[in-house]
Length: 359
Image (cartoon, rainbow, N blue to C red; front, side, top):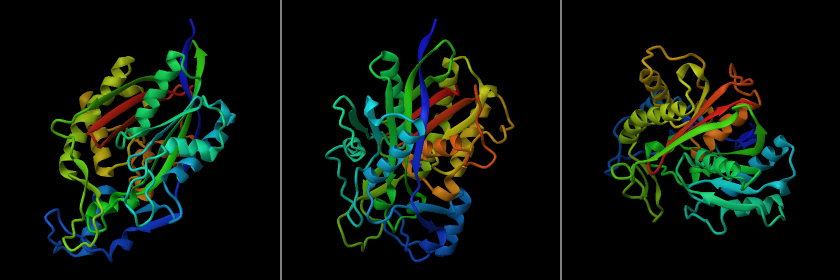
C-alpha cells in the first residue's frame, strides 16, 4: 500500500559576498562579561578561537541587505532547483530569530512577518500560499521541516518551502569574543508530497526543549564594554554551559529519532549538523558513536562548512544541504537510499533531529 512521503525536491542558498577574516578582528577590544578588558594579546585570543572553532573566515551581508532579502534570494534558487510554479506553494515557512535588522540599527523588525515579505518579493498572488515565521533558535529551519512533514502527511499541503535566514553580524557585540563566531546567510528547501510504497524522504524526527535550567544560555544583553555608548542589546551566550548541554543531549535526540525507524549508527551515510563550533560538532559525533558502543568515529560522515562560512544560525544546515546536493563539498556526495541525519541545537534551549532517506 502506498503512503504519502515528504520528499526534498529543491534547494537553494545565499552566501554573502563580504568575507571577514580572523585578522579583521585585530582592531577590536574584547572585554569579559564583568566589563574587564582581557589582558591576553588580541593575536593570542584570535589564534585560540580558531583552534577551538575551526573558523578562519565568515560571511557578512552588504549594508543594503536585510534578512528577508537574502531569504528571498535563497527562495528563488530553491524554486528554480525544484522546477516548480511558485504559485503552487501551499506554505512558506521562514525560520529566523531577529527579523530584519538594518545596518547600524539592532532593532528587530518582525512586522510584517519575514515569510510575508518573501512571498511579496517573489510576487506570489495565491492567497492560499500561507506564510509564517518560526523563531526557534538555531534549530528553526529543521523545526520548519518537521512542521512541513506534518502538513504533507496530514493531507493539508502538497508543496512547501522552508527557509532559514539570519544576519547575526547585525546583532553581535564587537567587544565580545563570541562575535567572531557569527555570520550571515540563508538556505531554502522545497518539500513535496509523493505517493510511494518505498520508505523514502522524511522517515522520523525528534525534538526536545529544556527551559528550566537552560532557557537563558543565549540572550540579549548590553555590550561587554562598560564604556560603550548606546543602548543596543546584543546577542550573548554562556558558551561553556551551552557546550556541555549540547554535547550531552544532541546525541540522545539523534539516537531516539534513529530508533523510531529501527535504524542504527551503521545505517548513517551523512550527518548534517548545525555549524556551531567545530570542536562541539566533533564531540557530538563522537558521543553519538559512544552511545552505540563504538570508539572509532566513522570517517567522512560529517561535512563541515564552518571554517569558511562561520555560524549563521538557522541558515547553516539548509546551506550545508544545498552545497551537498549540488556537489560543492569536497569529498562528500549522496546517492539513492543514503540515510541523512539532520541535527541542531540552539536558544531555548531547543534540540531537534530528522532522519531522511534519499529517494
